Image 1 (cartoon, rainbow, N blue to C red):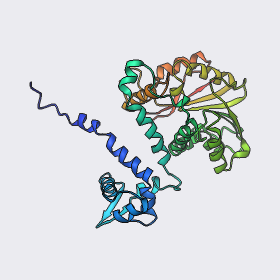
Image 2: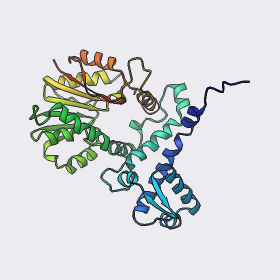
Image 3: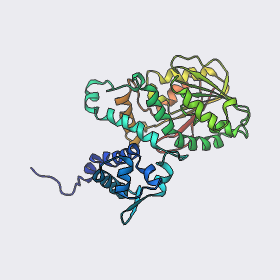
Image 4: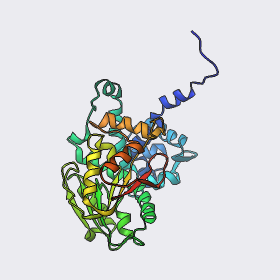
Length: 336
């Protein structure tokens, strides 16, 4: 048996062990490592006592966190780096722990990928899970920071509060409200109708209240597949990372229903992970399609060509990319 020495196996080895840093970070969050160090327990023995954990285990975990640059070490004392202090200490405005806790459940599903590919059935569908509220709570809170920052730029480019005022906004699958809150902040006369599953709406209300916008929001709990959004009621509708979970069986119908709910000249905004039309890249949208395979009945990621066809069928003009991101561009189309 021979092999080509010019072809390196490094990429395989790196990807094959890629789970390790993520698990180290997740365990540190679950144990309260960053919080403990932030509170003044800088040595591994002191932190182990504080956490009620094994000293050897804590020491090895801390050194691994130093290796991936989420802790710094001087002598026998550990400290948070600016990154971990900003994003991994509970209570910080930009805390990402909820996102990591959501990833734990996702990773468990991925461990059954071989079986899922054989059967075509998700290993566990979070939509039917007993802990749906907890699962969705971690998900929407974890996605808030990145989506909110993107939506602020979206509001600016749309001209919300400038050439677009008095908007009536439909936020489909609102989650934390990250996609509509910046629009409401930019347009002081805007009113928002937020739609999501009943277990999610309290989280939506929490984030909307945090931004002082409760008086300008209406909340409609229910399944987006079943709710009637009305006819010609809205100027703008946002589908922020929703279509991938709906799948090809439901996403076109959802876009049709949104089209009906928009006034003539109204705009639909679609943000999602979008592979190229040949489905050869970029890597993340293709990998995210696998995430949909293991976690949903019909979920997938869809190409620009598919979105163009669905939008045309729903009575929209040709979509354009208002914001271009390699993995997750934002498409905007106007109702004819």
